[in-house]
View 1 (spheres, rainbow, N blue to C red):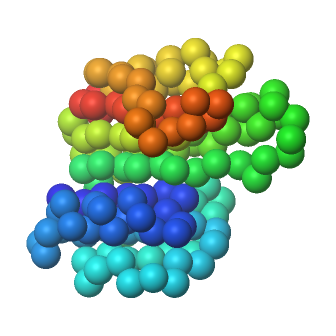
View 2 (view 1 turned 180 degrees about the vertical axis):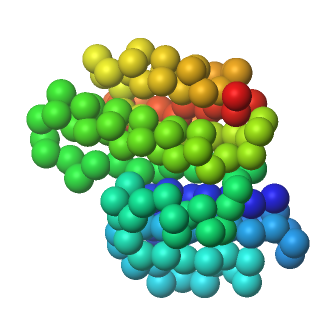
Length: 154
């Protein structure tokens, strides 16, 4: 399996994916922040903006069976602005997953709940056959973070 981890720092999801795909799998981790911890011999780390970097460096390591996006905007303290920026990152990550994913591949992405939620979920539904909402148990009750999962890239 090949996994693309967008917004990978500090590296926890990449480390988990590395263990799951085993020695024959590959993980590409990208973030604007450096990732200083060792993630495993099957992980390639790129430092840069996953959205601005363009598809070429990402495509060179693909296609991907799973695309993960834990990207979040630098928050401003203005809820509506942060929600909109989160949705923009989420939808761009969905587009990357649709372009670089294998047929039937999966996507998991973080999204701030808010007025743009339905638009973001519809964007995911257009590209994946099954869409699920997941709120991990460890998430604080007051947190606006949630994860949307897309299964079966169209």
